[in-house]
Image 1 (cartoon, rainbow, N blue to C red):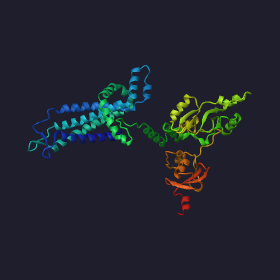
Image 2 (tube, helix red, strand yellow):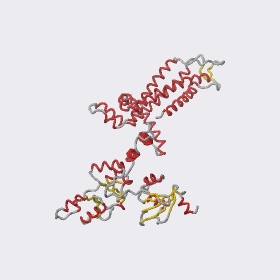
Image 3 (cartoon, rainbow, N blue to C red):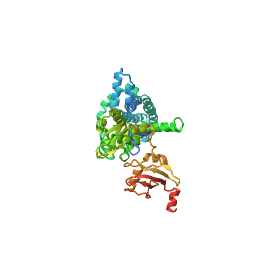
Image 4 (tube, helix red, strand yellow):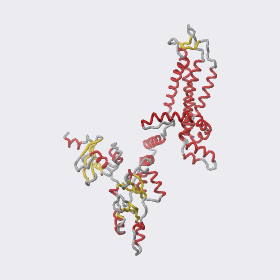
Length: 479
């Protein structure tokens, strides 16, 4: 949490102290307190000071514990030596029960702040407030004492009880977690019931907004690292390619198979009854070493054949049975996360996966190369064709193939097109029309005009994208 937020807590605590004082001491005659001058607070001011110091110390411990628990990750457990089993088990417990422990520490810290606020009020009230003519205490004297007490106490709590423990715990989360493990466990036991009740009530309120309540701090590690990477690239410490590689690591876990697959209409698939010579010819023409095989249509893929398996059988005189050499296919849904997909492909030693839509039909295929390219960029070999990118036209604007991804279009021309249904610019424009457009038709969206240049009757193959204020567009509309 940033320092300015902690300063805000101090100000709010000061206001809470004043309001609590009004409630505690009451009001008489509009400007007089009910506490008579001859009835001093029975406890000395030094006792309240000792209470404030003790609670600030406890608050610091709970703030450090909350920060440490929130920042602990499985990697911290791995860094502990295997022979140190006790500490490994403690850290693993903190990681596994992060929500429970962090919520308890947060609640304990909030209670400590309330106690500090009450102690500030009582400390201010314990001073000699000076009676007025009627024998009662002037509220102005009390509020002046309250301000003089609340400001230094709030600043001390800000530094000692907030910034210092939070900074230390951020630098050493595993050490802090181990040192405060017993305190964290005790807080979880004491505050488990009230914390569960508070989270439950908050969830009931926020559920209507599609959210979920939590007393833990939000995980901002990814955004912080992205900011650091951006600053490093701007200062010249890293190259732009290195920046793209680091950013792609974060985007990798958010990418699904549908976004990188080769769509069914672009697949090179063959019937399972095909002659081996025909399969070899298709492999030579396409440059692919693996070809999906289907029964009746490419919606019924049954396996994958490898060029090496065919060539090894063609050496002999025995007839080749494609079914015998066919390898089983890995089928995954369109929404499969790339991280999980890569793990499954490695476990199954599969180089290719068939992507299925929600109805069980074939949506496309994904290869290991497709997944790796999401991290390191395009890997072009002697058989690959260059990925389509928008090309600036002589008449203004850009010409792009329909299968160009929207992200590539946005990066190239500086636009911000978004769609939950379509990944390519051709699909995006198709969605704008709501029908299959014809060459020469155009439509406007997001400050751009899309002019369809070429179709195959089913999909958009090529189109021109230009800003509405471009010279060529203004000339066409006669402005």
